[in-house]
Length: 339
Image (cartoon, rainbow, N blue to C red):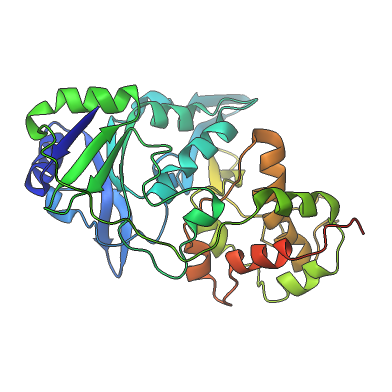
């Protein structure tokens, strides 16, 4: 289903949702950064730049409580935290590179174990994407098979029009239901053309060739040169829309506390540290190798897709200037022969 919406009606729609006590998330100015955060009014919405961090936080928080425990004498009581408490949510202005990562996370959190916290948030959330009309030197969505208007992961995709406002196209039952529920804010198409889409400069990668090299070069001296600059800060994983490593820790005392899930990163030096003290990834090149292997081999082996959407955040934030697109180019140029 396709409709059209003016910018004025888009902001009226956001205010109407907030008045109905729905949680509305979108890009907003937060200090010196633009982040995906709850909006208090439509005037908070910023659509002119990509948020610093990804939209995955709406479904997979940095930290969340899983259960509470208390002990009196020999009696231990556990209190589950019910995921039903999550509110109905609409997220506006989700960039295609962020939206495309949500189905990637879906596969992880609904695989052998069903993460009900994640899945309940997904069930209660409508994702409204926004096509990109600008790109910087770090954007490379087109190099990994996506595009500035790719609707993957969205329920409704907005594409800016030359005369102002947006084309609105549904891509799921949720999206169609949203257009029907709020039909007074939308209008029929009037033939206005979309604005030109962004044109990322990155050349498409041969992802099959890259994976084939990774399949056969776990031990290769090139990893030392690729990872020599990595300091293991984990910033790349924390801003990535598709990275999903986490740890579970009990916090509190012997009398009471909580079990919590926290983000983690395979680049951290203690990520694979065993209780014995042995660490199979005791050097940073091994840890950076795992990052590349996970994104372009291991995840593909398991789920048949790449764990990267080309958002470029890891390139922008890396304190030592590691460019993952440049790393992939280097791998693509390697000899395919098995060593």
